[in-house]
Amino acid sequence: MDKKISIATGALQRRFGDMRAIEIAKEIGADAIDFETAYGRWDYRSQGQVYSKSDDEICEYFTALRRRADEIGIEIGQTHGRLASFCRDEEHNAAQLINARLDCMAASILGAKDVVMHNITTHRMGPETTRAEFQEYSEKMFCPIIPMAKQYGVRLATETFGDSDKYGCVDFFGQMNEFLINYNRIAAMEDFADHFKMCADTGHSNKAMRFGEPTPADCIRMMGKNLTCLHLNDNDTLTDQHKTPGMGTIDWNDVFDALDEIGYKGNYNMELNLTHYGDKFIVELAEFSVKVLRHMLTERYGG
Image (cartoon, rainbow, N blue to C red; front, top):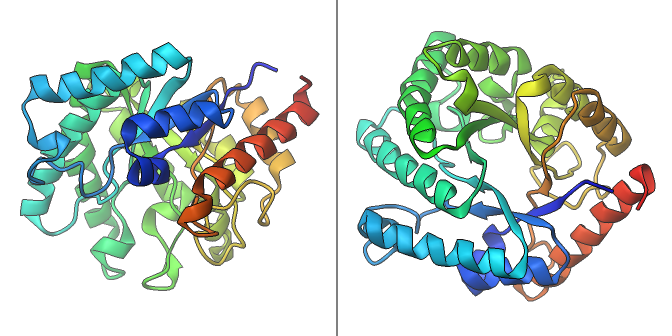
């Protein structure tokens, strides 16, 4: 089987540190990882943290991580950058652009192909936000970041959304038609297409189905060749549980059919909540999930 099993390491990084998280991912059988640079400590304003240092120091830090990954034979296939998208706070937005450049630089040093970032959300902007405002803020955020991705030789991947639990509605960019209109509009600008792609979060799409949106598999079909990375996870359609594939309601055979149909060649990356059973079992749940996905793919594609 030529499918690479990958796992997001955010929980492992927060519990064990960045270097050890990479080592644990290898020890539990993953072929690749999705390295996190998303949360509070990855902020140039956080004193003493990596992003608060000079570019040379940041480069030295991530070079050491890349070297260790190469030594033990695990791929850093993608990273997760900015989670908190643009909003009506312009000071926040300006800081996000500075941090986004560092996300792109870090991904490049780590050897990752894709940097996943969240689009504008109903959760942050409010349900009264107009369609034009969502489009405007999305362009204000992505249009400066895509040239940064190009500069560092990586791709920026915008992620599919689901519902806005805060307001009990489908997120604006959880609507696949709006998601694709927005993507195509930005990708058509200048020379953005080669460095602006999409990430399918199956759990997000599964939640959006409650509002009449397509299945996770059909969302993948709609994204087609511009889908370059994955956040595979499962849920009950009601909450964003980020469970191991097979532990929720998603039709995984249909998801794999869809990935085959679009000719997907990337890693089969899981973004999971590894603390479902508490911090004590983070590693065990990660290892179990890697085994489950490998079994699912081996059953389908052979050993």
